[in-house]
Image (cartoon, rainbow, N blue to C red):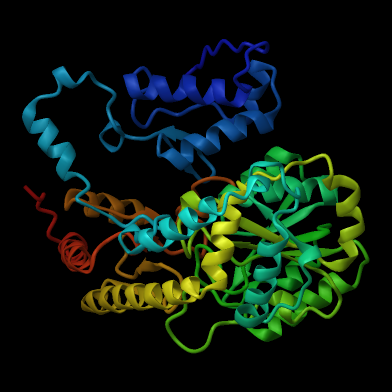
Length: 476
């Protein structure tokens, strides 16, 4: 086992977990920690460094998510093979063949996080922004309402009513620069003493934010219908964080029966709430859009979280929170200490983009583009039905590929890499780190198709068939 002589500086502005993370990452990059070498357990390292175990866990989770470590159940943490990592060498020392090999190592990236930026309506957005600035409205350069511009909040309520079946007032809507900021606001409104239940696998970025904010957290297993309410009832959770319209990363759409069970759970105690993350509900390719859970709520228990990052562009950084009426009074008490984090000019640009129908036209166009990519990739994957099966289809911008031929998740990723294709492990979305090999869990990878063109999707799928079908010849 590797002994880590880490020297921490409590007075540094760099958080302790980041100091631990940086030390271990650099040791792995430089080879001081060898491939497959076992690291101390989080309990042992926290005792040695005299820090909390959660500090070490946070450092280890970051190293796991970036691929520097792997977690083997019942055994511990191990350094990944150096071949799997980017080598931080001086460019002058890298030989030409090595450069070519590195360049060819990822010709096609199935990242689940991107969007098709080629289809963004740059001209329309630029025209609206210019017209707002030409109006010589000096007020837009003053600090606005900390909850966001009234006009935009009113327009969002209209959109939610028409598109998501949610009936709310502008007073309930809060605008913020991304979900991270809105979750921070929510912690001020709710207080951090409430335990939050999260699905697993889940959107780990939200889990980490809740953890850093100091919320007690617990996990609830899922079945084919979503979060198991019978298991949720066994926890001490006051809040359930769910993605009922399209769960990330599994792609599950929660049916009405399970939704009613979840609402029933929330209604049984005064302080129980549900956070509904509706991050990419706009993209559905089969049947009608699924109404939001908040639209079904009769007990004022759902906190709705929406964003324009997936539907327009991540850089716009405009998300919104819809609070239940019963939380508005608490919001008024706690909210005045905050200022709006979104430029008023950006807010008014988005408002016009929505009101003038550009957003609806853009969504229709993107549904067509993503729908064609979705169908094209599904068609290509059908040729591999003897080695894998596809799940999570018909919504969102990613698919899940589950190996049925005995291939492990890591083996599938490595074979794809040899063919110049990057795919992503589902196991990394399990709370608690990478848990490949967990009992009852099959080897599954994620294929995001938003950023790839149709031509590249065909070629990437062809290479995956070559990689997973048994031919592991490296692409030149």
